[in-house]
Image 1 (cartoon, helix red, strand yellow):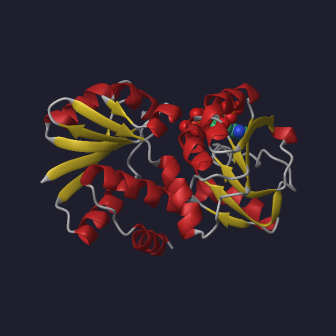
Image 2: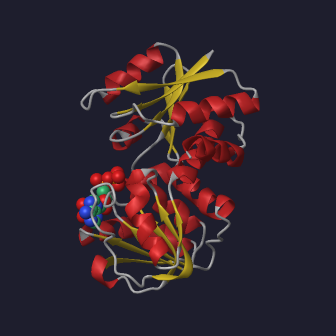
Image 3: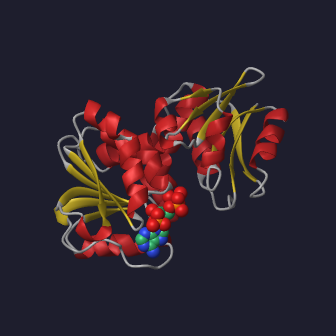
Length: 276
Ligand code: ATR
C-alpha cells in the first residue's frame, strides 16, 4: 500500500492522518497515512528515512516548512513565493515535487465553505511569519480590491509585500504594508495569521477595523483561536476558525498525491461533528 505521512515537531495532535484516511475511504484510494515526529535538527534525515521505507509523499508542518522548499526538484510558483512547502510528492527515485497548499486551502474555505466571495473586497492580513507567507499569493490570486498586510514587526510585513508586489500588480490588487496601529479599513475579510491568540495576547489591531458582518478568520482552531473569534463576534463580525482551511489544504495535498479531488466539505462537516 502506498505510504504517506505528516512530518512535524510536535505532530502528536495532528488531524492529518484522520483527514487523509477519510479522503482515501471516500475516493476508494488504497493508501496509509501516518504521522512522524522528527527531531528539531533532524528533518532531512527523517524525510530520507521515510522515503527509503517506501514513502510516496508527505505533508510537512511546523517548524519544517521552510526546510522543505530547498529539497524540491520541482517547486510550484505559489511555494516559491511562500518560500515554504507543506506538501512533498516523491516521484521516481530522486525527484521531489513540492507545493504549498495552505493558501489555496484558505481561499477555498473562505469562498466555498464560508460562502464569502473575495473578488473586489477589502482584505486585512495580520501577521508576516510563515503562516502569512503561505497564504498571501493565493489571496492575491482571488483578486480582492485591496490587501493590507500588518505585523508587530513592520519590516517583515514590508518585505512580504515587496516579494508579492509583481503578482499583485498582475492581478490588479492594491497591496500595502502597514504598522498594527494604522491599518485603516474597515475591511470585509480579516485573516489572523499571528500566534497572538496562542500566547493569550490581545488581538493586535484596533476595534473598528471590521465592517458589520465581515468575515474574521483565524488560521488556528480549537482554544488557540478562541480569543480572536470572541473579539470578532463582539464586533458583529462572523468568526471562523482554521478547521476548514486545515481540511481544504489537505484536500489539495491529496490531489497532488493521488490526482483525485476528495469531498472536502463532507469531511469538514464530519470533523466538526467529531470535535463538538
Ligand atoms: P508562523 O509560522 O505560525 O507564522 P512565525 O513565523 O513565528 O510563525 O510568525 C508568528 C507571527 O505571529 C508573526 O507575524 C509575529 O509577529 P512578529 O513578526 O512581530 O514576531 C506574530 N505574533 C506572535 N505573537 C504576537 C503577539 N503577541 N502580538 C502580535 N503579533 C504576534
